Image 1 (cartoon, rainbow, N blue to C red):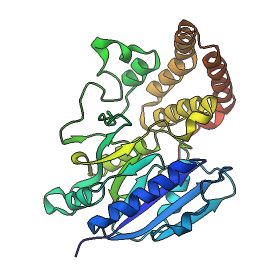
Image 2 (tube, rainbow, N blue to C red):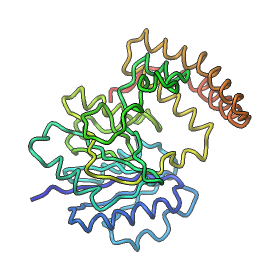
Image 3 (cartoon, one colour):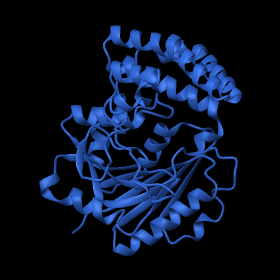
Length: 315
């Protein structure tokens, strides 16, 4: 008998995107996927995204938080309600196709792939173009290249964290697949105690992938299945906060996984070199609003530094 699957979606003011995502799950069920439950964890949304969802033909459970707990914490909260053999963490700005669920499930069920703990699929954008969504595990040099924008140069396109130099049109074992469609064995999730909740948003999935690899599990990118992903997510609504959380998660990752020396080097690059790079490119584009957001994001980061660089959790 084929194993069952539970889906966890974290929502924060996703609006119509959430309903579209859930409706696409209904259609994907027609392939006979054994769907256990779909858990939507709402992080204190102020829009109407939760209205009318009970009319959908889904085993739907909605958890409403009175505060925004962050992505990793909300994922853990949703997964705690699940008991299927497989978990799919899905962004609300995605839409599934006919083969989005049954193909990766069949791949993971194949005994030849028993060491694969995490699976991602090919994601396409609004134009139907394949998005480049896989990444390498971060290192100090890769963070440095990305921080000062060197990865934007043609000769250094593949030197950063993101695998932009690869067309993503073939199956491949990779370090990390994007968390927008994060398909995994529940035994992997439970053995790692879920996501590290210190990462409010960004890099919690990369941290999870690294810990999975360190525990002997592989991550695989599968092109036989596709899904739509808008990208950007609802965090684009709060650009200064998005920058703050992105930089904060980078430092959290560095102080958790790098040597102390490299972690402090990363702090120096992030706090002293990158702001200049960001301001330069913002002014070059005439983006005065970008300058304001950069200043605001770094101001928040500076105030939070004592919390950011303290000894990380054991997750």
